[in-house]
Length: 248
Image (cartoon, rainbow, N blue to C red; front, side, top):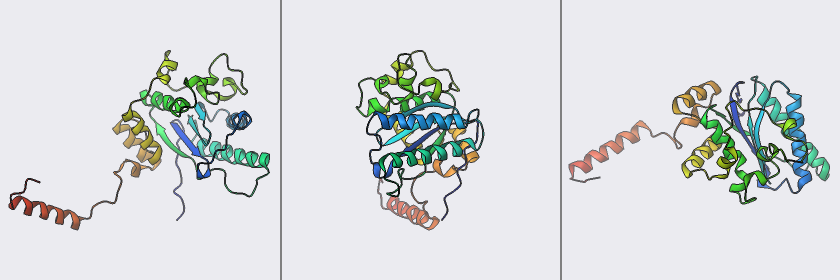
């Protein structure tokens, strides 16, 4: 069965995620991370005026991006060029062409409401290295937007070559907010959106956007719906239990 065509309308912000095949480590040293950042900068330049990169982090076997495309086709064009070009250069550097796909599947994404929900997603993205125990302070991880915005950042490319403004103001105490742990409920909600590609926002907004992008199934409970015959049988069993004096 062919995969359902992805709809990513312009004007919405998105969290985007992709992981290496079999969770293998694909970023082993500074050269690997810098190589990906250069491809990221090139992809942004190729779609100048169509794609905005708000936040990102590169982890040893995956990456997170917060993108804000202007046109409907920008997301697919940006991600296709980014992942294909990075995979080709990664294999060329290692002389490993033909040994298998670098990324396990197509990227995952979900739309984000441009309010406090957007800030929660950026916080989740930029806090990844700290949550994984790779650094003691999130901004110390060199391969992400939080570090890139540091005026003392010396890595190339820098923020000017990679990052765009946000659709909402960034709080002045942003570093402190990223450093603070997110609640279990907030993490669970974000991970559910990532797993199911569910729009992240209040319920009414999520329903409206899910209909727009064709992801209504992401809002439905998991599991097969109960058949009418099964529902009637269960109802009959409960009635019988009540007749027998059961409290259940």
